[in-house]
Image (cartoon, rainbow, N blue to C red; front, side, top):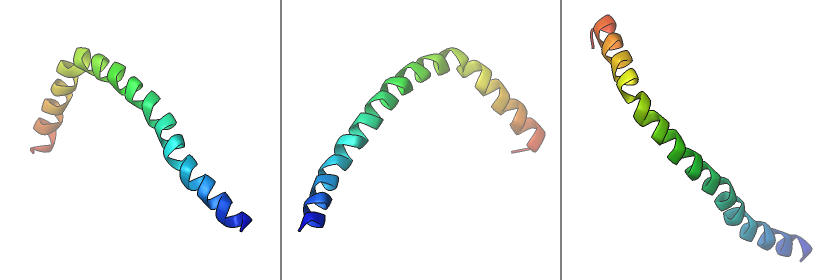
Length: 56
């Protein structure tokens, strides 16, 4: 019985823990995407060079 109530508490805590993990990641992802916007031409240049080297 105690194990079942423990499992119930865990099952409730998993989504809460996931939300508390995901929300800061989303906030970080937004700021990362903003920085990527500045660096996007740099990345496209790297991709262009790699495509030229690898012949893709």
